[in-house]
Length: 181
Image (cartoon, rainbow, N blue to C red; front, side):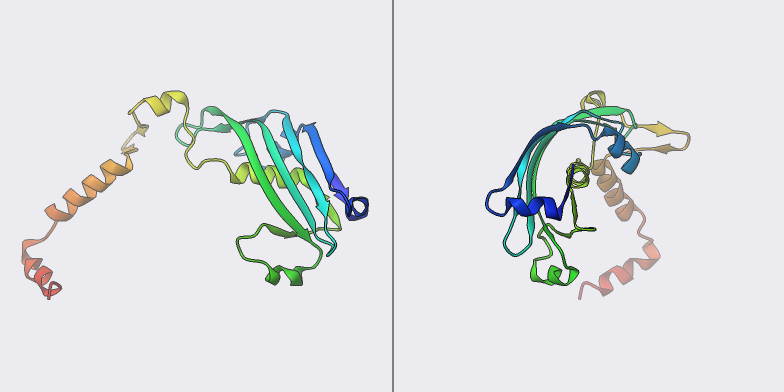
């Protein structure tokens, strides 16, 4: 879904309502080939408002399903999508200084509002950092290979603490007392 700014001018009085089902899988696989394995058709509900100061506000809720690789084994994991976001689009780059750094404000490119890109960006931004299959979540077994193995953060901290206390060279023990004063 792309809307020219001129198309949106007629929605100054009343917002343009969106209630559509869209298929963004080809675009998602092209833009995020390492992340998106599959993407179901998305239910998009929201509105586009054209404000008097020439700003455009996009408020959208997106629901669907995305298939992404597990962060541990790269096996396919299906995740539900339920993302709500609000973004403001302005014409001039110079106006960006009027907004807080945390505000979702973007400059319109070629006077076109690309809703598809906004939806995909927000879906990818809301993916969890750690994505595990059901088996990986229920198992304590971590991947390993020839001369390597994955350990949990807790195990790492415990090993680090025991290594620090065991590796203190007795000849340097006097220096340890130097910083205590």
